[in-house]
Each structure stands twice: as structure tokens, then as C-alpha cells.
Length: 607
Image (cartoon, rainbow, N blue to C red; front, side, top):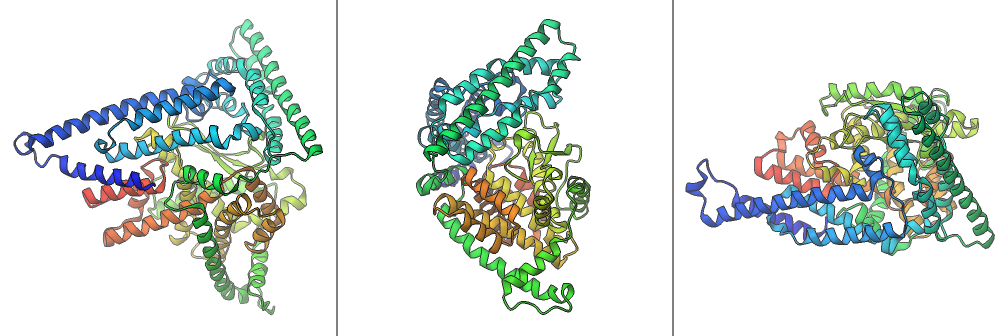
């Protein structure tokens, strides 16, 4: 959080204390000037809430695809064409609302509204930076893909199928215009983003394939509607194919001329993006240095566990003199205990209820078990980025399914699958499921949808979201998950080393010019990763910027906050209460959650 916001929050807290009623008979004991201040605060609070609602309504008109992902299906018939006029309107929107919110007297706002406004202003300033400075719309063709909202409309039962098909039909009108605008916007793309765009848009064709065609034929739509649907479906397929061909031709041309844009963004842009996206009280360079120190500490912990475990797993074998080689040998042996490529998804499904039972039995958090979690094969249009991921419903459709996406490794070659399965072995697969499902992403996002602040939910902070999932891993093991098995703890530290290495890798690649060979050495030799995992992470570091730092940044902030609250509460500290209070504020940045929790603690003596 920036210093000015902290000052505003402190001022707001002072006013809260000064203006609050001091007894049951307010008229007799509240001085007139304080009465006036209360009225001014109420008026300013109302003005902020009205402007916020107006802003959100405008946001969904500007970004209807985002609205659909949040469960706001009123916007589902619209598809925004990303042309020059759209970009001009977007900048005008951002500048106009920045002025409107800046005109409010923030010193009269409540702590909750003040933190909402901080998130809104960060978003509006980032939006302007994105389109005037960063300009990824020119060099990242993977951001142009219509398929995901169409898939949500088709697969989410928010309305009868006939109505959803009609929405699908209306939305398809502008698919050709969308891709035409995308082609006109692209200027000298970066190679990794170009390849991802080709892969995912080829996968997008599945959303417009025979399944939806068959659903239309068997639906209760009128015959003329069906005919229009077929025509638009054909036009959409052709537009996607044309875009893919355009990208392939562009790839051939740029390969010949060696004129791809560098995917590395450099220090200045990286620090700016880090400030907008991560929103913590440190710079990217400082976090990088902290990660280098943490890496050495984790190496020491792994070495100590290896000393303890070596006689058990290698009773008749002399240990290597090199400590890191000794750790590697033990990790390799433990990694042989894994699922097969045909049972990988099934093993994940079976572990989910076990994790839920542990959380409940150890009183770590209340789980909303009525919220569905479905393990599925990652759809083609979402592949190419991660082995596992979560697609959660937004706050406007809280009861929709959450999908746990798992890559179809049954289709991999035996060599590739075995490398990946050794990485996601019996031990680390449990940690992965904690991270992605319970009590990690799935649980956190269910809680986020219950937050009374829509702003703190829709502007989800990646450091808080990823940081919570990483924190959940450590917290579960500290609570006794796995019966304090030293083998599980050793594998956990290897997994945690990945979190730390993500930061080193991302900053190293994007700012310091780390080569692929250097990156592979960092991950394989320095973090004990399997080559298939390391290759995937290298690709990810070339496709995104800053996001890989969110895990370590959020995790360290959450651990620090827990210790701070524990020190303040002493014997009154309750872990479950801390978790539920922390998650109640949506997906806001950890520094903002800290301010809210500590404010609550100062006012009531509890969190």
C-alpha cells in the first residue's frame, strides 16, 4: 500500500473514533460540530457508494466478457470489439472516473470505503498505463480469444438452455469483427505470446464445434433462429481459423526476418507492473533479493531433513559428500511414488474429500460444502499455461460450479508423463491439491464471493489469492496434515522452493536477461525440479510478467500478518478466527486486509 493511502486510512480512523456516538442518547451528549461531522460522513459515504455502483455498471458495459466471468450474465449478449474506438473510449472512461473519485473527500470515508477506493484508483491508473505505456494489445496476440465467455454461457446453468443458446447466438454476431480488430491491433508480437495465441485459438474451435451444433438442433428454438445460429456459427469458426492463419503467416514472416519483439519487458516496466499488480510495501528488486536469501534457508532445512531420513531410505548406501547431491538422491527416490498417467486425475478427485475432512476435524476453517467443486480435464482453449488451475464462479453467480482443471497427461508420451508424474508425486500432489482446492484457491474464492464489498472481490489481487494458497500449504502441515511425516515436509520444502524460485526466475528473466540455460540450471539444479516441470515454468516466465512473484510476495505478507495479530492477541489468538477474518475481506491486497483487521482489533479487541 502506498504511503498516502496509509495516511488517509489513519485520518479516517481518527474520524471514526472522534465521530462515533458515545452513548445511547446521542442528542444530549454529542456536540453540534460532531453531529455535523457525522452527517457529512454519511453524505460522503452515500456519494461514494452511488459512484461505485455507477462505475461498476460502466465497467461491465466496457468489459462484458469479464462480466460473464464474474457471473453477471446481463452482459452476456454483448461482445466488445477491441478496435481503436474501444481503446479511446476505455481511456476516457478511466480518466473520467479517476477524476470523479479523486473529487470525493476521502477523509470522510469509512475504512471499508477508503480501501475500496484505493482498489478502484489502482485499477483505473493501471488501465491507463496498460493502454498508453505497456501496450500489450499490440504485441500479445494471446489476449484475443472469444472462447471462454462463450463456454461459460454454454456450460453454466444460470438460465434454461434455450435462453442461453439465444444469448450465445446474439453474442456471435460480432465475432468476425472482434478478430478483424485483433489483426489490425497487432504490431510485431513476441514469439511466446504468438505461439500461445495459435494454440489456444485452435482450441477455441471446440467451443464452436459439433456439440453446440447438436444442442441447437435438439433445442426448442424456432427454425429461423436455428438457421441464423448455423450461419453465425460458421462465420465464427471461419473468423477464428482466419485469425490462426494470420498468426501462422506472421510467425513465418517474423522468423525469416528475426524481428520478433523481445518478450522481456525490462526493469522500468517490470517495477511499474509489479506496483500495480502485487500492491505490497516493497519493490520487485527488494523481493528478488529476499527470495535469494530465503532459497539458502530452505536449502539448509532440506539438508537437515535429508540427514534424518537417509538411513531409513538408503540403509546400506554411503551418502554423497555433496549435501545438495544427497538431497537430490533422496528426493528422486521419494518421487518414484506417484500415480500413473491414466490415474492422475482420479487420484486428485479422491484426495479432495480427505482434505475437507482434515480442515473440518482440526477446526481450521468453516467450509461451504454445498458449493460444487468439479475436477475436469483442462479445456483446449485454456491449455498451455499450467498443469492445474481453478475456474471459479464470480460474485454474481455464487452457486455455480467451480472447476479444478487438470491437464490430460494421459495423452503425453511415456517419457514426458513420467517426468511430470515424478514432479507431482504422492507427496507433492497432496500439496498441489491443498493449493488449488482445499483450503487453497477453491476455498478462498468461495469466501471472496461472500464479501459484502463487490469491489474487493472483482479486483482480486493476485498476491493475496496466490499467497493464500501457498500459506494454506504451510498451515495444513503445521496443523498435522500428513502426521508430521518428515518425507512430506521434505517434499513440501522442495515445493516451497518452487515458490521462491518463481520470483527469482521471473525477475531474472524479465529484468536481468536470464537465458533458458540459466533458468533450467536454477530450477533443475538449484530447486530440484524435474525437467518437464522446469520447461513448462520457463515457458510461463516468457508468457507472463510479475505474476510468478505473487506466490512468494503474498505468502510472506500473510505469514507476517498472522504473527502480528498473534502477538497482539496473545492467548486470545484463535487460528480459525484469523483465517475467517482474513478471508472475509474478499481478494483485496494483503496490506489493505491488514489495515481492516487491525482496525477491527483496535475497535473491538478481536478480529
